[in-house]
Image (tube, rainbow, N blue to C red; front, top):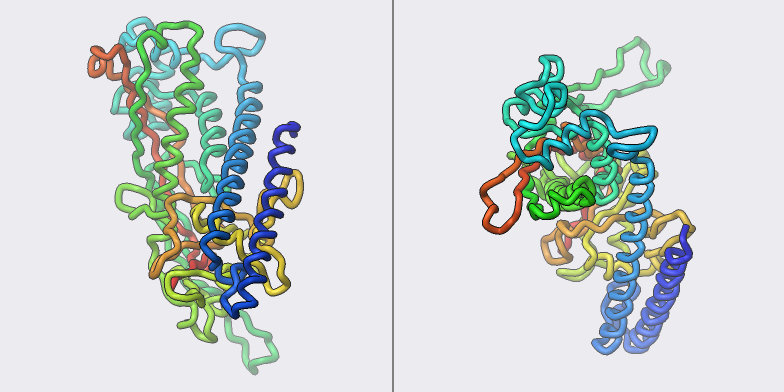
Amino acid sequence: MSATLNDLMSEVKTLAAELNRRVEESDVEQKKRGEDLTSKNATMAAELKLATDRVNDRINEVTDKIAKLEVEQKQAQIAANRPPLSSGKKQRSAAHQAWMKALKTRDKGVHLTAEEKALVMPAYMPTEMKALYAADATTGGYFASTDFLDELMAYRLLVSPMRKICRIQATSGEKVQMPSLANDTSVVWATEQSSFSASTDPTVSMLEIPVHELRGLLKVSQQNLEDSQFNLEDFMKDRLMKNFAKKEGAAFINGTGAGQPQGVMTYKTVATSTYTGGSAGLNNVTNAVPYVLSGAASGKINADDVLNVKMDLKADYDPGSTYIFTRGTLNTIRLFKDSQNRPLWQPFAGSNLPSMIYDTPYIEMPDMPQIGSGNFPIAVGDFSYYMIVDRIQLAIRELDELYAESGLIGFIARMRVGGQLLLPEAFRTLKVN
């Protein structure tokens, strides 16, 4: 790990100590006046809040730098493993070289050999290769080589927070079918009943997760495209994947399921308190995502809420659980302490460990709701029970004339992705009063 990264992590820890000091200062004054404590309800005097907000803003600034450096380091590792395009002992695949040639010559494949056309152009592909692309093989354009796709997906994983915690399944078809458990199996001790009775079998139905088309328009200057030193691969990878990740990330949270993945926050929700025993954690829940109602004042959350929503999960899902929320919600959580006066937010417990919320990892998702009355600003659960389905291919079509007056060449990129919950009971959300 570079010294720069270590320095930034040390600065975050120093800032965390400063934030904690300001919270304690606020708590002392509030106790004197018999008011709600900042460490429990995030309320504080205006002058203290201004100073605290500045510390929070600096923490966010530094953590952004850390995230950027980590991505750059991993990107460099991916690039270091890449063989050269046209020289060296290990070259890029013939398909990749043909694909790059097709994109740069921009002559609809005229300069490609018959062998090169068969590698990247659907109309010239052999039947067995066309089968891999199914309906996509009729759309024209060029298909990216598998080695470029491997790099693309590795980079996509780096820049997509949800892909780091969800289950990912590749498919060559239009959908993936997964068994959906409708009723759990019951098990009894033989001595509890006089005659043998078979355990009730689970009711299993098939859950279909379709893939949906995601399109991106990429513009490249004609001058750059004609420059032999211009790295078209990295340019496409950086521009396309960042925007694809942003768009699909929004759908993984709030997607409707119609023409896009179904997001975690669009499933039916039911109050955990309505289940037998007063908690969904004591039951098998397959038809809704249970929510915990905030115990704070209207429109607010408190420290207990952050812990209670996680504690309502079954123990089976706790070890793999992750919080998701916006940066604004995180700023509030950083002020909270537990009953032992320990801050809930724990920055970089170890050199290779992420920041935690009460020993549970979290990711920031800008598409989550903000704290507000009736909103669901926090979700927590084992996200391996949310499946992302990728149709691993990238189709590129050129728009030669559309942007000619501006000296630009347009590329339409198409990828396919789906997403859906596999088991709702593995998740909880917090609803604000």
